Length: 212
Image (cartoon, rainbow, N blue to C red; front, side, top):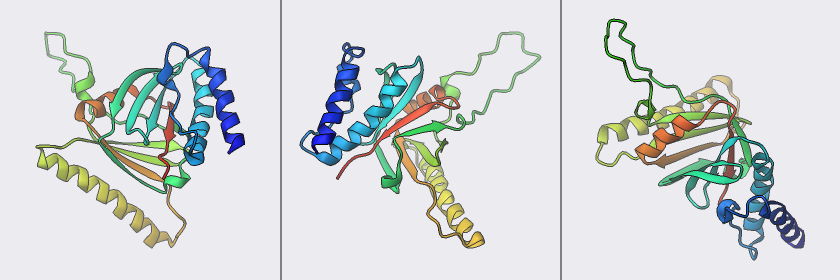
């Protein structure tokens, strides 16, 4: 416990100078809770490295139910998480790299059109998509389906299809080793599209787990 407190204090002092104008960049941790402190420290160690470079990264704080788009440790955009569920949460690493960005159904260009056609925009982004990472992790992003039973059915079908595929793989191969961890999260439709618009191949993702 003493070691964790000392480590957290040192990291805090290292970033306090460069991030003095942004007091909320540090993941909150309960100094009286060793598990919370340890989780905050392991995420903070990775964020210090990311914030030292001119890059954008995603911080998924499952403890605070929020997704933050950040650069240099400064919050650029915030998306509340409405609900989430995870498998093998204890196996989650602190840092992941996105393997590829979500697929987008691009508009068909009409070569005979006289007027200039609109380029791809935020409204063209998917509202439900899967993100795959290295090391192995799958995140299924769902959008809020309130008032849209058809969209809810499609999303639930996608979740169950993924589970059936995993079970089928076990039956075919006989491999009983645990599958890679996964995370399902639901955000508003606008925030889902915003996340799909923002992420790029190789983008860093930080994940902070809740503690009991």
